[in-house]
Image (tube, rainbow over all chains, first blue to last red):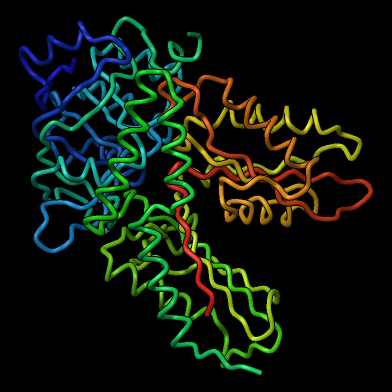
Length: 182
Length: 281
């Protein structure tokens, strides 16, 4: 059984988050944004200067990913999650401004895990190293900001049934702990 | 005496880099299939199925298996009597740059590690290891791209020279327990024992080149590999860290002589997409 979510998260989809459990399968549709290390640093610097972010954060889902360039005739290249913990130092200000979902791989710092629950936001994991498969679920991709960062630029993606797993639910459930103590 | 042209070297590097990016090696594919047949955890099974489906898609459509097309480790073994008409590094770099543009690989390298971190745009430079080794007049070339996430969990431990094999296994298992979830498990664990400090790390990377289905030729080391693998696979981290038996597919050791005061231990983890290709030129 999979739960369908539509990004950006709003209305009924946002309400669904409270009912999710760590380990649940998600099929994500809609519009999401790629941002990884260098883009997070740029966004943090922009916020420190009181500036605007290059995309609307309200209800947004960020995919910690740097895809390969698309081959001719394809909407996107291969895409997959990078280690989410490296984004931990930059995540709190984004949650404060309305970020509702993040996609990465691996566990996060305890305070970041707690912050996702506190802000009613969901951290999901994608399987790492299955980037051809995940890339086939991207139907459109366009650059949004920081093109000079190359693969670390921010892109807007239209995704269809992107397969994900709930890593941290809003009740404190944790896919990484739950699995290990079983 | 035989002369290898730099053009031939460049072309071979391009070909191997592309094959490595698109086509999961047979030994790794087979180890993943064996794992799927034995895995009992539902999420673990689902992840292993996705990994195998992804490998089939990437191979058929000639697209990268992983978006992190990696930093390119290139091992060049020159047999006795082989002559190169100039330094190999520029030819190897040119081969990688060509593969990057032809194969739409991700440009994943920055020229300065600290200040600026500007992308080199074409995956140059490669990380080249040249050795005089092997058979008369023969050249063996291996390309092993490795992702940044798995490189980040590399470790060097300088153990006491009096450490026992059991203690060494414990150190490896503890490291894998802490870091495997960041390196796209099921991982392949490359272990370098002995040498000097940087030598142990290099050995741990070279260990990843061995066929993952083949045990160590020496029985003592074979037992250490088996014990370590069993202990790792009791951790429960599982495929993609989502729970299950297969946290690792293999543990492979390379060793070298060392100093009386030393017992260096290098640990390199590869993600499940252990990509490498070799050719004899």
